[in-house]
Amino acid sequence: MFRGSIVALITPFKSGVVDEEKLRQLVEYQIENGTDGIVPCGTTGESSTLDYEEHDRVIEIVVQQTNRRVPVIAGTGSNSTREAIEMTEHARKLGADGCLLVAPYYNKPSQEGLYRHFKAIADAVAIPQVLYNVPGRTSVNMLPQTVARLADHPNIVAIKEATGSLQQVSEVLELCGDKLNVLSGDDFITFPVMACGGTGVISVVANIMPREVAALVDAFFSGDMVEARRLHLHLLKISNAMFIETNPVPVKTAAALMGMCDDELRLPLAPLGDANLAVLRTVMKSYGLI
Image (cartoon, rainbow, N blue to C red; front, side, top):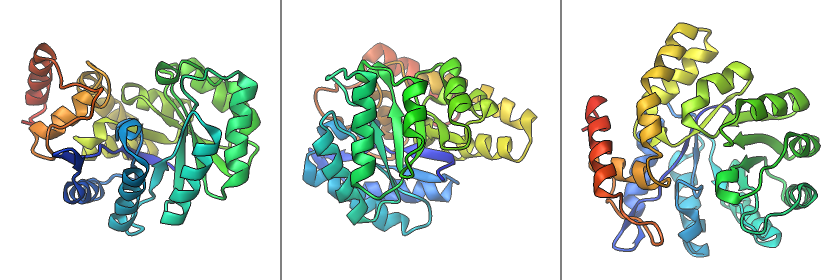
């Protein structure tokens, strides 16, 4: 259901509050440059520091601004199953096309706990749901066997795999077949994930280079492997630069350097360190971004 170049959108702030006008401009920038879908309130959108009212408002703005031109997949995950159900239902009522559900963090549930958590959400809310496996953030890896159990649920349509492991991606694809789409959660392996059978990427880099990320995915699915491989290698340096510190610090700094938003993060995230800022500037200059 969800495929192509999907951006994990940053949330712009100004003087401590969501900059709604900049958020609308970011949505337009993505659509104008070929992005196939938008994820508000994900990790890159600093969802963990948005209060409930802000969370709903960001989703509402993105839904309104896209106006059905591309799918909106709202981040509604939580380490509380009850809270995740409530947030997912809110997103459904706001008009989101789907929801992105991160594996519960901090609790460190068992594989059975993960299964029951995601099944409970899927049973409770009739909206297409994308699982999100990112053990580097959650301290728990949702194994392919657990994903395969969940893939039988009609409301679970895809998984964002951010383990960085092509072996795990391959095992998920082998076990699940065509029951759900597999999306790369790591820009630096989008091309090889698609080569294994993935259907696209939920991208950080697309915040600042949406046309190029979309071109990579489009080239692959049009059968132009030479061009897809070229773009994969071309984007590798900027993809790595987006993770020189914790996401979304580098990408939001990059967007600010490009004049797309203010360079404002919420604590406990701190501004990019001076040494890494110099590295980021050098990389961005090499791409002609600044």
